[in-house]
Length: 285
View 1 (tube, rainbow, N blue to C red):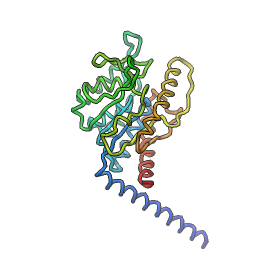
View 2 (cartoon, rainbow, N blue to C red):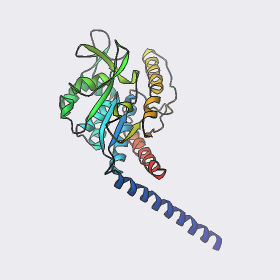
View 3 (cartoon, rainbow, N blue to C red):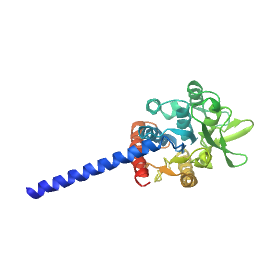
View 4 (cartoon, one colour):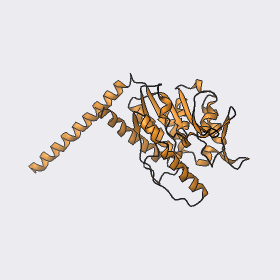
């Protein structure tokens, strides 16, 4: 009994020591954050991007408020709404009640591609028309399909830019802005960390495709999705390397690119992994 009692006391001391160490790390983080201009780069990944919302909540609780945000695809949607003043709670509430069809308003266009009427309507209802009217400076990555290069949009019509950034190739119609046709920015640069260089002191990138394993590809739609996910993963490397810190919740087949029905689980994964990795960043600093 004496040995067991001694063991319990030692374990209790270790737990208390770890708790104090964690609290110290958070205290240092929160006081330091008042001086640091944070940049936040949110990557693409379809419905997996709901993870971004949980990460945003974890960042807020750790005292991190981004001074500038860059987003690609679903990262542009989440980042744009957050820059426009929507809270993580409001964003989660929205994603909880959405299906893929309801979110993007899938509707065949004249060219046989799908259009995103509902997304456009949602943007027009909740966000200002111009980038300059946002509460937090924001930009989004798109792909110029004629020049075959990545382009960062940070001025002009915000609604068109976000819609273009989220227009997955082979599924959605290109979006024409000032005579140029654009598609999903993830084709060329899935995590737009480079767009934040010179605009902040430290960059945090969020990668929602980390360790994603291949799924089944039984039809043309599934094949297109798997090809697109492969492209996203390949085009996330540069964005990860350009960031000072990377938050990368693990993803697998249980989270489909087009399935928003697991919003709560995705949010929780982003929140928990965000809290863990944020503390780890500053414990090692």
